[in-house]
Image 1 (cartoon, rainbow, N blue to C red):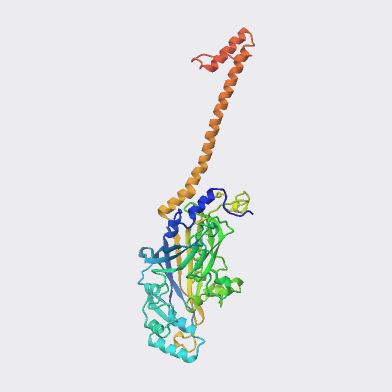
Image 2: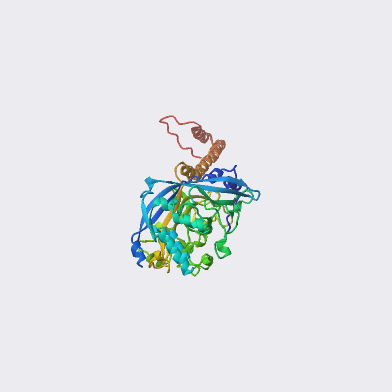
Length: 510
């Protein structure tokens, strides 16, 4: 099968100039300020039976939400480097949208005390004397296994004397100072210094991450493959893709690179798209998928231990409701209902295709997948994005720490969240016009022009044939008798002039 690449001496080069990261390109403003509105939706798992959990019973939860925030993104400190890269920081700001939410930030949620239960698991192998001291501290500061906090406090942080004590005597134990919240570090902050390729000198590397915070690989995991920073920053991808391609991006929040694979073709608001989704092996453990061994120590397949990049707290990342995970995980918690439709993550992208060789030939895999898409006619822009992830806490009874009671070991979901964005409004109308309407008009216009050209070509042919017929008739009349001449002349004249009304011309017999 032929490979997909640039074709033609002018079209693709002009296209590459338009999409590369260059202040002079058409897409630079789009790269700098993403025109797609992003929304962050949080769904909390409200614990119904906290007292029974402490007695060793199975946890029961109910889903609360969504609590929706408009996410504003903008790039700052944009610096172009000499090695065909550009460095920047992308800042994010979240604003609550009550009209889109099923609840308010003032709603109270019962959930595990991440600090108390997390610290208990972290101290399981410490000396008993130290665990007894921790029990005393928990009691002094009224730290219990479960807490009742508002959505706003859980999301963006709350003051706690216990945190102040830990930061005073153990300054390196927690990476945060002051308030503690699950997403406190995301609001009004950036996700690190990204350095990506511009595509000006080497278009094949456009949008790929060169470094993040000055490094080309992280040190959270136990293998070079898992520590690699691969793909893009997760907003735009290189054009000219086919179903054989995979979309890879680095997520600072997940502390790793993720890869999406092609699922199916489709449309978004009339615009043809490719849908990419997470493979079944994304959060698989090392036993099920050996390349993920570097992310271990692992529990059941389908949850990833992110403790090494989350101050060693026993936190786990997965799909919502343990979708696509070992069924044991969902069965251990009452109230979960994993669903592919509701809990899978996907990305719909308008595939920029430009092919040579067999790519565009009828019968090839590329042609069978999208026969309606013509090479060099599309752009490769994300049209609809939905990234859904769940954060869970591993809890258990720890001997010597009374606050943990008789809790049976369980991966207890805290919340799941969705980051989604889709093109809409005038931006969507512009892309529909450029990507669908104009190509369709041009396609039909070529047939109209072809028909007009055929008509114009036939006119001189018909005129020439009529002229030849007249000459032949006059030539034939000179070879006949006088009567035949008269008849021929009469017929010839009838061709030159219209017959008077009511006159019938007799056929000239040659």
